[in-house]
Amino acid sequence: MGQKQSTDCKIEEEELQQDQLVVEEQQIPKQSLEQEKQQKQHFELEQNNQGSDIHQIFEEFKQLQEKKNQESQQNFENLKQELEILKNQITEYQQKFGDIDNLKQEIDEINASAISSIQANQSSLQKQNLDIKTQLSQIQKEQIQITKTQEDLKNIIETQQNLKIKLDQTQKKIEDFQAQQKNQQKNNGTSKNEKKNIPQISKKTNNEESSQDSVDLFLQENLSSQEMEKLTKSQLKAQKKQKSQFNNKALEFSLQKEENISLKESDENEGNSQLLKSNISEKSKKISKNSKIQIQKETKEFMDQLISISNQGQNKDKSKKKSKKSKI
Image (cartoon, rainbow, N blue to C red):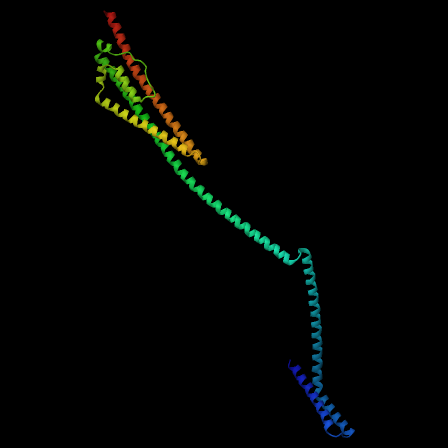
């Protein structure tokens, strides 16, 4: 860069000297050709002596400038080729995909449609989630109701078991009473008049009535006054307590049956869980019905045993009468 500036300065200096000579030639009268020639030779010598380096620098600069021009030309050609390639690519792209603006519009329409679809799907999912939460809440309520129904069934089963235990206890008391009667008859015997007062037993039982009422009626109709007196106060008290407990249990079964029927009627339109409740209610009714049938069956057995006890006593009386008559 410094060499270029120095060369430019020397060229300007030479031009100024030449201009000065021209001015001098115009202002000063012409000298002789010899003098002018000497001056010219002197100037050329001076110029040659001073400008040898400048000439070399100028040549180098010229070569460098030509080289740069060649590189610039080459770069221009390269850029021109690249531009042509880009034009060809754009033409090919347009032929393949059509107008860019139309393509952009189609992309925008696709994006808008996709966004609308996504929003609709999100709204549908939110509604489904709300429905699922509602169903879960309903299922939880149904589970609570099912648990309550199971507890009620458990209570019914426990009541049935308690009734069975009490019936077994009553059976045991009957057996004890039978054994006591046999022992008294064996130890003391029975008088002829007392035996006459024992009426004939008729198997008149009504399973639809309360079992304890049937027992009381049977005892009043088929036992003599002396045999009734032999029943201790504790036994009568136990019988009254058994009657009260039996009536309470019968009332409990009746209330449970009504509750199960109302549950069935109220749950007819509540889907699969309501169907489950209905099934449970039906099972509860079946259990209650089976319990009632079992109680009636055990009551009938109890009555049959009492009738058998009384008949045994009458048969013994008849045999004794026959033996007395035979002795007479």
